[in-house]
Length: 70
Image (tube, rainbow, N blue to C red; front, side, top):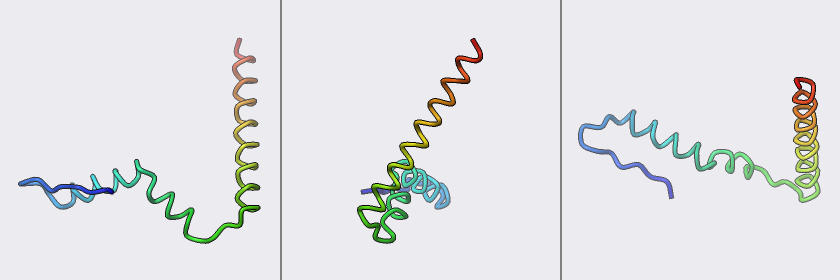
């Protein structure tokens, strides 16, 4: 559970900033966006496969660039 304690003399805006930072680090907002609508298992699998292909292509591109620099 996320929470921020406001210390004596602490500004409310600073507490809000700390809370937002905690939310971002924990991945809460990304999880909420992901669960906003139901995603069929077949669509989820396809999305993950596309992401894996993109990651692989990116790694291969970087490897080629590294080899070209040598």
